[in-house]
Length: 94
Image 1 (cartoon, helix red, strand yellow):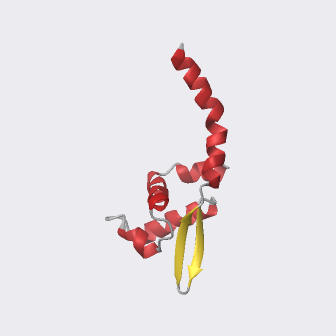
Image 2: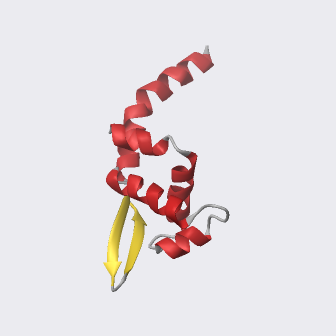
């Protein structure tokens, strides 16, 4: 789970996840096109971190690699954070 929190700690990786939420199955070239001003190498590096954390799944189609969001680790993070959410809501009520 630490690798998931580490991956989520970077804004660029969170933005990549958001893009994949809406446009699943993109190639590196397509993803890179959604981030003007960011190098292709940087996008590739961030994708690799997300893949190692289990949040991005890669499927080969011929010479292309398609990137898909795997939300399962995010679900587990939300479960991990639930007690803190409840504690915060209790404090806000009082």
